[in-house]
Image (cartoon, rainbow, N blue to C red; front, side, top):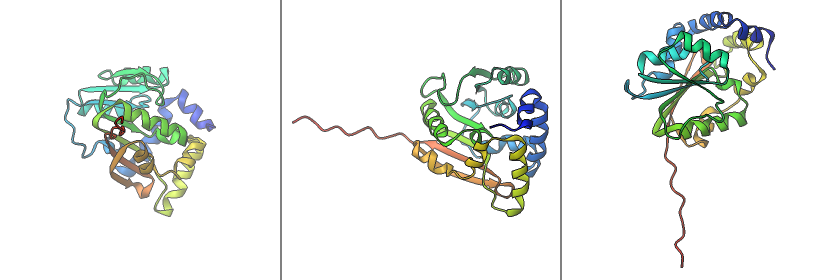
Amino acid sequence: MATVLRSLSYQYPALYDAIAAITALAVGGAGRFRRLGLEGLPLGSQARVLDLCCGGGQATQALVQQFDQVVGLDASPRSLQRAAQQVPQANYVQGFAESMPLADGEFDLVHTSAACHEMDPPQLRQIFAEIYRVLKPQGYVAIVDFHRPTQPLMWPGLALFFWLFETQTSWQFLELDMPQLLQEAGFQVYRRQLYAGGTLQVLQAQKVEQPSPRTTPPD
């Protein structure tokens, strides 16, 4: 269930953007926040990148500065329209993260920022399976999202933000073992870093090719 202010933020995106910009100061500002998931990735500018749940294109803006082929996917036509106006260098596709209208093995990187906490665990498992499907062999996934604070002083601010802007799934998300969910989907997690007193996590993982099922030769 969404809060009143979250509903207003859909109508007035600048409201949410302003709050998000203030929150991002904890990691060095909005520009740094949008690049956190990309730090250290061994990908050149020619990599094909999917910005999953791209919203109004805030993270897409950072992606097109680093990569030449960026696709943004979101379920909201209004968000995609705004993203296309803000970041015309990218291409956009309307669709749900759980069932992307995209081909198998199409991307070198799937990036998603501040979106997973809006999904319940069954949805996340479907989404991770879809990310695995659309990635090329040895492709990467980068996730930037909330995390259960490791410093007690960070709890009041995070709780207030959740109560004002987020849904019940955000509280559930704090209890999830995200690396474990990614591993179950077939990824090898090689980087997990916490920021802002543990309230923010960055996960980077690589697609691991599943071994072919063994077949027993006929007698």
